Every structure is written in C-alpha cells, then in structure tokens.
Image 1 (cartoon, rainbow, N blue to C red):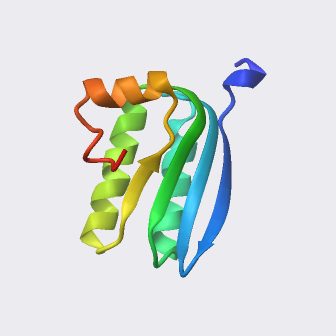
Image 2: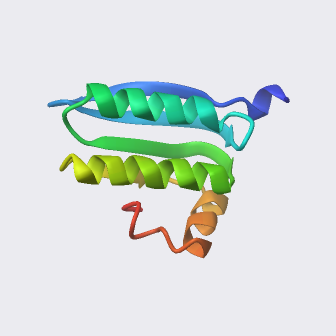
Length: 106
C-alpha cells in the first residue's frame, strides 16, 4: 500500500457529546474494517451527533458505502444525528450515483 493510500482518522470533540471523525486517505476493502470498528466505538461511547468529515478522502468503494449506511441506521435507531460532510468531488459523485446524498446528509 502506498503511504498516500493509508487511512488516517482523527476524532474531534464538538461538545455536548457530539464528535466529528476526520478521515484522510482512501477507504476501500483493504482498510474499511478499521473504519467500521472506529465508528462502532464512537456510536457505543457517544451520546450526541456523529459527523464524518471526508475533506481529505479521495476514494471510497462500495464497502465504505455499506459501513456509512450501517452507522447512519444505528444512530437513527438511537435517535442521534449522523451526517457526512465535505466530500471531495469524486467521492460526492460516488454518493450521488448511489443515491445517498440526502440519506447521508451531504
């Protein structure tokens, strides 16, 4: 894996139990399990909204989409907000093609 392709994650506390997960790199089958685990931890431990910031992500695949859908559904069931913000143009296009822009709050 090229260093540029590595997925990095930073958690930002937004106050009142809300957090933003800032992602950078590419997200695909090879590293999506790490994202899935981090989201599950944040969902279990948090009380407020969860935002996923994709400003630094250049590529997502279908496994990424599945993980984000699953996280959104879990938070919806808990009465908490979930949204995806700042997708790069290519990533936003992927969400548009999948019909998920409104669902993910983009």
